[in-house]
Image (cartoon, rainbow, N blue to C red; front, side, top):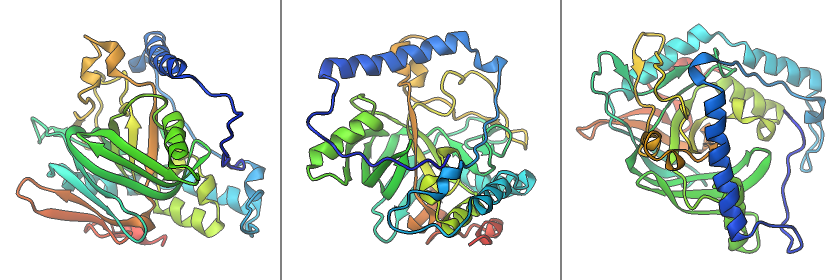
Length: 340
């Protein structure tokens, strides 16, 4: 990772799909995903993925000269990629312990961030043996640092907003996505003279020509070291999603994290089984597979400095703050603030 990111300028002369072609390409992504699943059986294989910076990461910053050398950046990424997973596992278990008592989470932005979001959580049938969130350390996705779940679509409402984010190398400014019943109902972004061009940009690069997408993931990234180091080095905007998703709360639109593997049993280090893997769409996989999956999953991270509040909301209405004003405040998670 680290190549110079791309900020497109729309031109009338640029080739574009027709409405019919847009529907075909969306359908192709779904069909290709289903074919891949038939050929590569999830329960019979696994993977580990890790990212390293390329030398180009020190070049191409129009607003400043990067003071950090490539050697310094590379060594910093090595530190991030080799953090002690046991420490994070235990801290994340504390976060999950609280989230497992909640029926929803409430997220508010601060400063220029207008996020005002309620995410409904699924309810375990056997709380002693089941958990809502997966404790993600560094066995599959490196580096360490997140807890995540599949939200319940019904009851998930509100605005997800980030002031500036790169998604798959493309810049989105003032990105706003509105959810109703867990599905995208409206969206916009800045950086274009015509607001309709901003909508088209989202349709092509987040919605991938689907009329709507569900929220497929709700997560808290806990790798504050990655956040602090990338800010210090000036490379935050160049981070790949593999690292960027660990640098704050994030929400994915599209398929769930367990796409095509919902029937595989998964357990946290404490022995509890993760049960929140399906949503209203993926449950159609046996009867209407063409409606179950979308062939995409895009993570959108809210940086810690833009988070006013991330709290667990219990059935009685009481709230347990996990992040407040960009810092972890849940007892037992104070360690995560040290890099700041």
